[in-house]
Image (cartoon, rainbow, N blue to C red; front, side):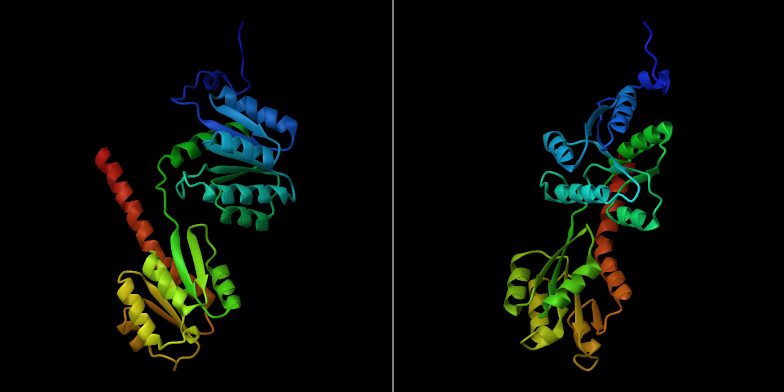
Amino acid sequence: MTICHPLGESFINMTISRQQRILIIDEINYTRLMLDYALIGAGYKAATARNSNEAMQHISAELPDLILLSFRVTDSSGVSILRALKDYFKLRLDIAQGAEPPVIILSASRDAKQTQEVQSLGVSKILLKPINMQELLDSVKTTIANKKNVVPQTRKKIMIFDGSVRSQQFLESVLVDEMYEIETTDSETELLSRIKSRKFDLSIIDLPSLESEATEILQSIREMSEEMPIITIAASADQVSQDEVFSLGIQMHFVKPLNVDVFRTEVDTLLGGEIEETLEQAEQADNNEQ
C-alpha cells in the first residue's frame, strides 16, 4: 500500500534528529487539522489548541519548539493570546530571556496597526492567509534553526526615582520594553537601600524629588555602584549645572520638559552596549568552534 502526502514524498522522507514540537493555536477545527496533518507529514510532533486555556495546558506539560498562532480578521483575541503567552514565558524561571519558543502568526488581517502591535510583542514572522503550505513549512524550519543561534539575553534592570507616581508611570510608559525590568520608588531612603543591595543596569533620578542635597546623594550612589550608568532629570537649567553632574560621573542629564524620543534613544544606547558585546562574544565563539 502506498501512502501519499499532499506536499510530496520529500516531506514524508524528511528526517529530523529530534522531533521538534509545534503547538498550533486556532479556533477553527478544519484549520487545526490541516496544519496538524502537514506538520506531522513533515516530521514534526504537533499539538493543537482552540484557545488560550488549552494552549497554556499544552505549554505547561511540554514546552514547544515553536508556536503557530492563527488570527482572524479584526481579531482581538489573537493579540490577547499572544500577550498571555509572552507574559507566561517571562514568569518561567527555567526559560532564559530571549530563549522562549518563537511565534509565527497566521493572519487574515492586513491591518497595519495590528501588524505593528504584534511585531512590538516580538513575533518571529507573520504569514498572511491564505497560507501557502510550502512557505509555512519553510518558515517553520528556518525559525527553529535560527532559534538555536539566539543568545539568551538578561533583562536590563532600571531603577526610577521620582516623587510623583504620575511621573513614574510616564517614564515607565516611555521605556516599556520586554528587555527592560523597571522598579520605581518615591523614597530617597528606599532608593539608596535598593542600589546598595541590588545590581541595577541604570538609574534614572529626578533631582527635584530629592530631599537632601543632590550632589551628596549622587556621590553616595556613585560610591555604592561605580559602574552603573545614571541619568538625572532637573526641573530647570539653573537647578544644577551639567558640569556639577558630569563631575560625579553621571552619563546623561536632562532638563524638563523631556524630549521623549531623545530620552528613549539615550537609554537604549546606554543599555545596548552590553547586549552588543554579548552578541559579539557569541559570534566569536561560533567562529572559533568552526
